[in-house]
Image 1 (tube, rainbow, N blue to C red):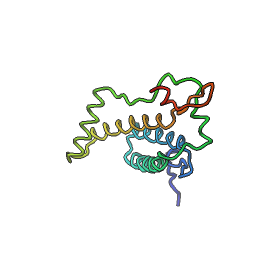
Image 2 (image 1 turned 120 degrees about the horizontal axis):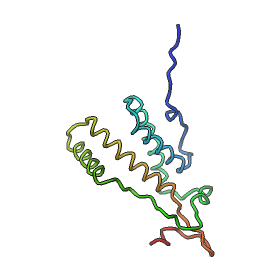
Image 3 (image 1 turned 90 degrees about the horizontal axis):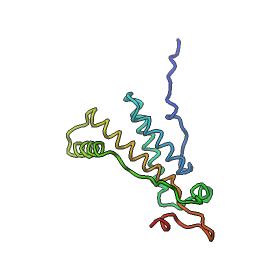
Image 4 (image 1 turned 120 degrees about the vertical axis):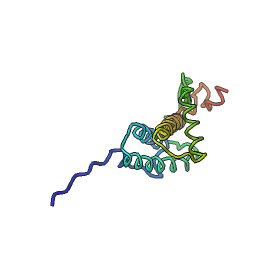
Length: 153
């Protein structure tokens, strides 16, 4: 009997666990969300949502933990970044996101157009969240290091 080869999407086998650095988890989340928004395959979408959920759950557990010492250098800069992470959807997209969430919360069902808008919202939020996770936190000065929030505020 011949076996039919099944192809697994590469993102469905990307390894991660509780020991994975939060910056790597943030990268994975971005990749899952990007592929999710581009996919038309319902099975792949469901699998990507599962992977994204697992990755976000691991990330959530680390949010209030100190930054691991081996990541401090990668999150330290010599000059202030020109840009900071922002969530800036266009007004038409923001309105669609709000409408889709409102309709979903009021029980008006889940239809393909709403799925498209909610996938877009998820993509935008994941990109913003990942950018926040990977953004520099410290500024190296002549005297020592300072939190960027202290310098910018």
